[in-house]
Length: 181
Picture (cartoon, rainbow, N blue to C red):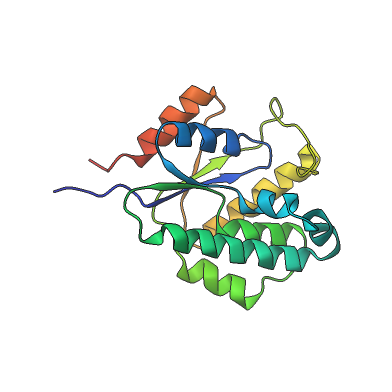
């Protein structure tokens, strides 16, 4: 019996824990990828102000962007590796002390990722703040905890990425994408 590869692998976890770097390595290895929508929003005109002044609006914009990315890749053959997913929005809302809107709740329940969810745990040795990654390391750890709890809340099993070199992380990702024996 042939088992199809997962269609939606997701990289989640702490800010600054190497997800985007791993996503780039996966793309270079030939995997289709979907970028982190939050970073795209933050880099767009008014994005940082939206996050600072209207975190609920920012979360709703992230959810809409994740839903578009999900739909974009839903019917294409093969595997796509996403840099974060819809439950990450719920984690952002939870860590921000905000209520999850019904539209986000519905999206998390109806748009289901079918593949491994790999968590990049907070990693102090590589964490660096930048123009969009404004959290302290402690805030990044709290974000990671909230995001992981959100993925669990929606019934996903989260697998921790090892704290190893990029090549070893890519090999781990590729092993997780192989069909079950």
